[in-house]
Amino acid sequence: MDAEQWLLAATIFLLVVTLVVVGVTLVELRAVRFLARSHGGALSAEAEQGASAGPLIAFIANPSKPSVASLKGPLLSRCLAQGLPDPLWLETTVEDPGGGQARDAIARGADIVVAVGGDGTVRAVASHMTNTSTPMGIIPVGTGNLLARNLDISVSSVDDAFQVILEGTDRRIDVGWLQVVEPDVSVRDRLEKVAAHGRTPMTRRRAQEKLDAGEGLPADTEKHLFLVISGVGFDAAMIADADATLKAKVGWVAYFVAGMRHLHGNRLNARISLDGRRFQTQLRTLLVGNCGKLPGGITLIPDAIIDDGVHDVAAIDTRGGIAGWVQLFGEVVLQGYGLKNELPTKVGRIDHIQARTVEVSILEGAQAQVDGDIVGRARCVRTWVEPHALIVRAPLPSLNLR
Image (cartoon, rainbow, N blue to C red; front, side, top):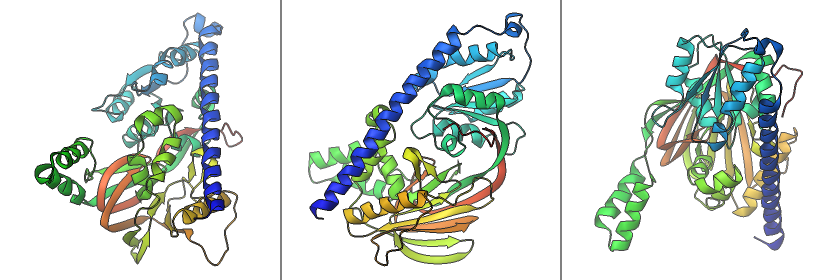
């Protein structure tokens, strides 16, 4: 790759990092303002008299995030200031990341169940609220906050997100499901053999360390809900390799850094079935989208609509090394503005098609993910859409709180 291409790639990277640093700072400042308003503001006359009217809110919070713990007092105080019934505050655990708490909240009469956390908490809560009459709200406090972005719920102002809970509208959206038909055990088996019979103590130790870290873990065959995007290939490998410490410091840019390690990986041999139509191709990743907005203002699947009863499938491929990825990034930016790259010779491309059911087989196996959560390695996965299965509390159509 020549110097101009390297300069372009470096410029894109620096631009993304700058945007994230600014975004993180704004989130912190607005969270502080929310805390001050909640503790320093005077209670309404109705609340001072002990009156309670309006919906019973159940907050389901992920206590592993420090920012969530700091929001408990302010959120409960805001409910009191609004004269609402005493809210429920239910915390998730490693063993139960939100589903059991959602069932408990509904059983205790909650009028709205609010996920306070990242995409994993939102998924866990939503998976047990599908096909119920209780709406789900979101206070987004995570790395990606994917569903919140696609619903135009503010990811930078807790106050704005809380106002949506109180004043928003209930909207029925589709949910997606992914199920692994055939797990990929090849990587784990290979590591186990090296750990037991490697030529040197060092190779055996390194293989065992990878096993202990969960590398090569085959996917389970349970069905997994997704609300935004599921994927097999490069995108999942990037998420799986993201450094947790870096993610805590710079947010979703950690995924970008992890992705740099996979730019020169091999293309995948895929057999794809879309509502029974069969294709065979090579690609880097296959995405199944319920909606298409990502962090950083990126719209990866521009035609995806969250309540149209169909999924939008994007097959992404690149050739030509770094040049292909640079061109692909440019194409993603252009399609966010409704433009297409019509050049006849492209080394990076995205092909879009719609389907209700998708089955993809990767001959060599690959990582799979749902809304940024790793499922594990798979050789074959199946996805399908369940139309209008979840009620979410969203901003009124005239509002745009992003």
